[in-house]
Amino acid sequence: MKNDDFIITAISQKGNLVGYFTSIKNCATQVQTAHKMNNISTAVFARALTATTLLSGNLKNPDDRLAMTWDCTGPVKKLCIETDGAGNIRGFIDNSQLEFIERSVQDGEFSTEPYIGFGELTVSRETGNSAPYQSIVVIETGEIAQDLSLFLEQSLQIQSAVNIGLSVDKDNKILCAGGLMLMGLPGITEQEIKEMYEEFQKITNLTDVLCKDEQAVLEMFNSLKMDIIGTRNVQFNCKCSADKVKNVLKSLKPENLQEFLSENNCYETSCRYCGAQYKITKEELDE
Ligand SMILES: [Zn+2]
Image (cartoon, rainbow, N blue to C red; front, side, top):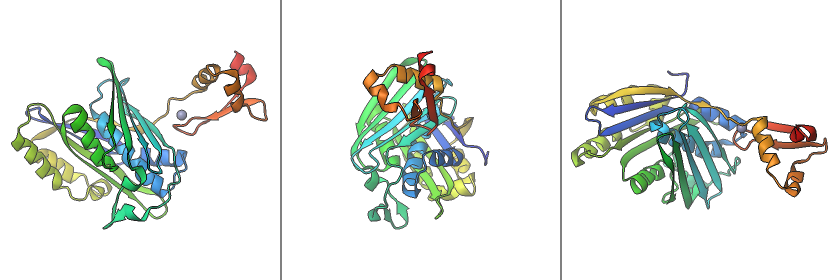
């Protein structure tokens, strides 16, 4: 389990408390490389990647989809992550070279608030069983873990505890990335919610747990009488293809298509999600 990225689902024996634990160091590293992110953009992006993975924990079918988009006033501008029920995940950040803001580090803790600021958080969900769903909430704190929790409360009336851990060294290498989330489901009592927060808060250093030893998470599940009911692998995977790019180009008006024409007489573009470069000749486009 240590080497692969994963998300674990646990549920209480009474069925009114669900938990997700994820580790996505490899995905975060691959997206970081694909988008040539500096360390600050990595620090913000990897947290959003973790939040989206946590929220995708209850997607049941491989084709179910979830996307989280931050449209914000801070220098991040826009950050979008898409994932599915098979654990494929991809995303982009508008600003891959964020400049360090002094107040983002206080007492050794990194805050995403100065980089995100205010704006809107959109969560879109498509599952085979129900109509597509989209919910837009105001970004209240700019802290990714906290805003995920507020989204759950405001949009779905779910009480939750969310923690995201990330460690990036001075050479911009991701040492660990992941998160932990507990959600109280309908039927949970106030006493059980209290116990949920108490047990959750015992894990004071999630980064240590992710980098060294996951035992503390298993112990927390145990204390809350929760059983692990599933583990899914998570992988960076973009489903873009030359055919999809061709279809997009074909749908453009001639004057807009012209913008993609290079000196080599090819239409050149790259995928926003994975950075893959596409060159389509005029002949190929007419096929
Ligand atoms: Zn792509």
